[in-house]
Length: 173
View 1 (cartoon, rainbow, N blue to C red):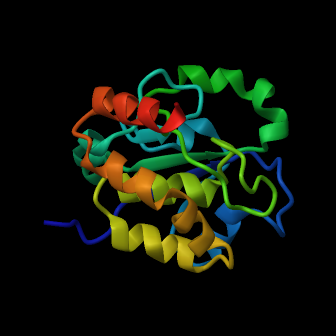
View 2: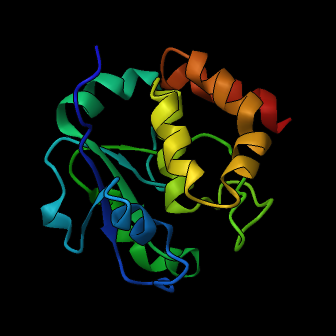
């Protein structure tokens, strides 16, 4: 059973070009809520955090349904300046190995845009239709899916973080 509406929130650090920002485009389409202060994040939500020690998996689905899903929107150029995000409350999770298709980081492993990160989490946790909806509003959305289809399908089959790590190792060797 799917809840009527998932709570999907983006912490926007205002570090990127607003005309190229995938999070702002998602907001304009009313697919996400944007917040600018960390204390505004939903308590207990799953936070997609590239610095997290635990991998995101389908086991996070129940928490997403109850508490929400959060993406952190910051420029990869400033990644070293956001280390304070390591201590965020909630369930911080890093995404497994995926390849970016966005125009800025095309072909680069793990350098995902906010929409790519959200779509990956939604896909892996069983919300494939929602993931495709998010990607469909970007010209390069289908490229992201093409580049990562095999990876996403495998990750979606994994039961927990440990299995995700095993799957990832197979793709990275």
